[in-house]
Amino acid sequence: MKFSVLMSVYAKDDPAFLQSSLESIYDSQTVKPDEIIIVFDGHLSPSLTDVLYRFMEGRENVVRFLPQETNRGLGEALRIGQSACHGDYIFRMDADDISRSDRFEKQVGYLTEHPEIDVLGTATEEFLQSPGDLESICSFPAEHERIAKLAKKRNPINHMTVCIRREALMRVGGYETMLYLEDYYLWLRMLAAGCRFANLSEPLVDVRVGNGFYARRSANRQVKGWKALQQFMLREKMITRMRATINMLTVRIFVLIPPFFKKWIYRHLMRRKKKNTL
Image 1 (cartoon, rainbow, N blue to C red):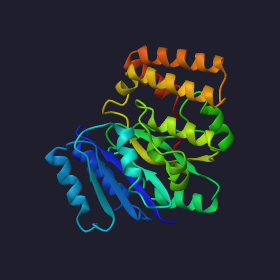
Image 2: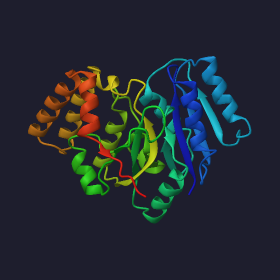
Image 3: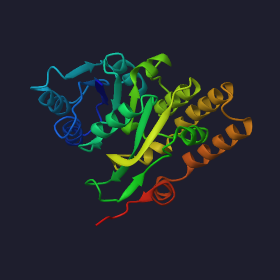
Image 4: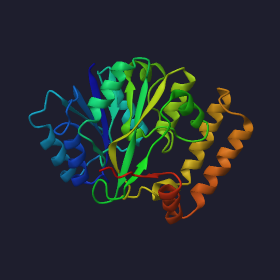
């Protein structure tokens, strides 16, 4: 199985975080990707481009850059990048997170054993300064049926962990812009098309939750995106009008509450504490 890694980088990304992220998807991996596609979402600073081109040295046959003149957002960047991916599967990676060394090995192994699966996510472990410092795990249901049920209410996949069958991705038209909800919109379209989903319960990506993580979930623009998602699910008969009304009420309240309260909700209600093992 050949696989690609797809990443988008934009001007506000941190060069040090990007360096760690890049090292984690190649140098540290027990199974290395066949290609790494990196979209420059608009003009990048010299420090960011320096990190990127130093990473490319010696890996010119693996790493490919797709520079874009203007910043058009994650959905458009991923739409551009997906067309350049040639692997049977496409792994997503964010520019400030860290993939664990056995991430690709375990996800590729699972997909090899379960060829019916089109989208595979994993749990994540969140951190502030260094991986493991919060002992906070974000996980979702493992089985397709439970994932499809959860998708009627909220996003059922950790986007930065996902591996997608390229054929299934292109069959539904791939990524599209949807106001911070590009991934959720893609999952809904793939579910409507009959694609099969799964999640691994083990965290295989360490996710940085500083850097505006909670503030981004306060954007009023998300309400417009959520409304479009409800309309899509209604057209596809995935939800009832009552469910759509409840979803919109929930997201409107969530967007309005202060970031510090969002932080408490995420930490205490939407995450589980990591279990220490001897």
